[in-house]
Amino acid sequence: MKTLHVNPKVSFEFTTDKIASDKSISHRCAIFSLLSNQPSIIKNYLPAEDTMCTLSIVQSLGAQIEKAEDGTLTITPPQSIVEPPLILDCGNSGTAIRLLMGFLSSCKGFFVLYGDQYLCSRPMRRVADPLRSIGAQIDGRSEGNYAPLGIRGETLKAFHYESKIASAQVKSALILAALQADGISTFCEPELSRDHSERMLRGMGAKVISEGLHVTIHPQNTPLKPLRMTVPNDPSSGFFFAVAAAINVGSSVTLHNMLLNPTRIEAYKVLARMGAEVQFIEKESMYESVGDIIITGKELHGVDVSDNISWLIDELPALSIAFACAKGKSLVKNAQELRVKESDRISSVVKNLRLCGMEVEEFDDGYAVHGGELKSATINSFGDHRIAMSFAIAGTRAPMNIEDVECINTSFPNFIELLSQIGNIHP
Ligand SMILES: O=C(O)C1=C[C@@H](OP(=O)(O)O)[C@@H](O)[C@H](O)C1
Ligand SMILES: C=C(OP(=O)(O)O)C(=O)O
Image (cartoon, rainbow, N blue to C red):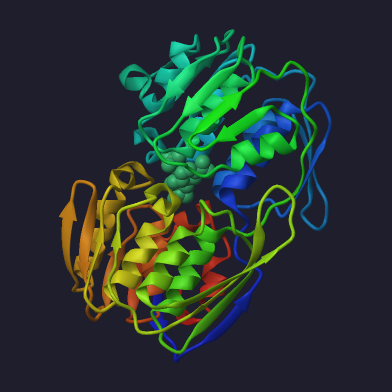
């Protein structure tokens, strides 16, 4: 287990176009390429552990993958999905396993999906139950709630499903199943979750119609057009550097080529509400809005965060570092989904902030942080990449030792290299 030591530097101005490529979009590029009968060409695919697991699963399902010198991937789909002799390893990735459940439910053959100790304890019935109700054959531990999951492809029925949780993974799994169902399906969610699947599938020619919180999906009897995509940089990964700028008055960070999808940049808007200067500069792009984000540190004050939670769910651990450095109290509510991520992120944030000397209250669905002065601490990442990176960023304010940092490779392999530009690093 590797420990990372981070110490503050004086104020910094940092510009980069090297933030990790978007993880959500990279997973989708790999899986959706199987819906065409022609090669998809993907530039800037994320070479992190989560998305490399998805890519090797797509290969095990029969796709041919070529990588050019500049990293461009050509993914040539098989004529029909191959039944793999081995089990399919999703690593640490909830997105991989849940989207693949939806996709494989209608593929001829038997498939076993599994992952690491963290993934195998995350709930899967949120996807397995609606899929089983339309004919999918899925089994696993605790009535199919925990991986390893066995899936036998079946003919699926069209559906109308009202999801109780705003989850893009649930939505995307059901959209993928609906594309192979025997009629027109509709999916409804309580709050709009990230909508990359809908945008990308429409770009590929699928009839996926979004109206507010409803998506109507027409079955797809012919192969879709291949993807031609440059994956933008990931705003969830860029957000660690946004927080670094925000908590160091006088410092600034400029992030180039970032995904600016409105369902993904809400946390930056919360930083702006807290007093940081945040500027979005939008450029032309294909399926998604892309551009630059500039963040400048100012005095911060506490905020309440209780709406549009799915638009900033992955950023809440990093945001809690900004809360700790702000004047007054900040409150997070309606975020119970944090409890079923790579770690129980409510508990991980609360425990680690307390180790940093902060006054924190824990609720079932969130926490309150009383702003103050971060103290030097030794942090447990709980094997969770976002916890490790959030507290590494806190190290730009007070010396931090982060234990078990290998998990950072699941989403942001060059994080420590970029961090060394704004903090003093001792690996
Ligand atoms: O669809 C996606 O790419 C993701 C959806 C979110 O999960 P939920 O769907 O569980 O909210 C998010 O937390 C995850 O990092 C990526
Ligand atoms: C929750 C996350 O990812 P996943 O659900 O794909 O494991 C994340 O990256 O914060």
